[in-house]
Image (cartoon, rainbow, N blue to C red; front, side):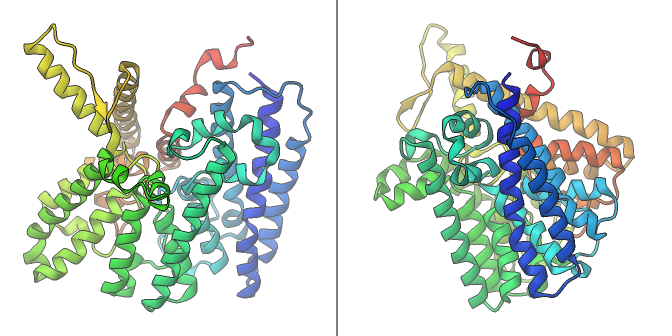
Length: 480
């Protein structure tokens, strides 16, 4: 384990985080808030710690895959700790575990909250809270690759460990160029959403808050009623399209820019994603027609809730706790599924389910034809059995994590619906669950212990489990 290089790079990442707090500082200046000093202190503390760590002398410049995972794990933990400082120091969230929960929820683009009244908070605090979505959506470390040329030699291991994004073979040879492409597409799409929301009548500040939430598929709002506050069909449609768009693999947008339309349509994950969305919207619309008073309102609410759940964003225009059980079961299934790999969304990811479906089909055929050799293909390419097995292992770990965490959270003695969906919502980085943690509820009801468990779930879900598992392996801490 290359301790010195790990600490050196984490220090540089903390310095990047301090720079990313500056826009919130500017917001505090614009609105003449007392939080100006709070942000100066938070930026200073983050910058000083990061600078001191970055000054550690490096003896070896080579990183192993394990080192990359350790950098990712420790970086995400530390950026969340320092990211909690503005809310904690300002007194907006006076309990540090609550502030840490909110910070982790922001960076992991989960959107679960312990706040009961966000509208009383300073605009700069809410701005930083939402900006963490955008920072964490595409990947904190991926963003750092753009600003830290000294990381060039270590970027591959770091990017592999952090980003659930597209493989390098689908874009361009150089890792740093990949980061530029990803964030350029990400920034342009976010800007388009901001402009669209403003044209629909949403104020500039609110438009930025909700656009970065949709882009990072996070879901923090500046209104207690979330998007329902605006009572606008146009805004609902804009955000529905935006959330679904950010739930699609970003490599497909690069293909579109290079004119590879046939390859886009052949993408099995995209077709599965669109079919999943269309099917869910259709059945929920039929199920809630009587409750909403007509097919158009039913279509509006079902489209928005399907988009916000399948993209793991977590905005709300309706309290789906009050919907029929059939509709809630569809939304519960979508919480597991999530969107596409290579997007800013969470969940199991559509491509894993596509491959596991093919693996089950192969197993069924081999029962009746035991001597047959049946390969699994996706997009015309044969998958190695090791890849299929690793996907299967991930799915099993995903279920085990949800089951184990739900058991721990159940110690708070809330109903099964609340306890289970709270864990599912945090592991899948969705935000709201069902029951007391539904779209009109929050996570303040849980004990500090449960909040720490759920915080771990958010990190594990965002980093797709394996980087955090490295921390618990005895061999990680043994000298070679």
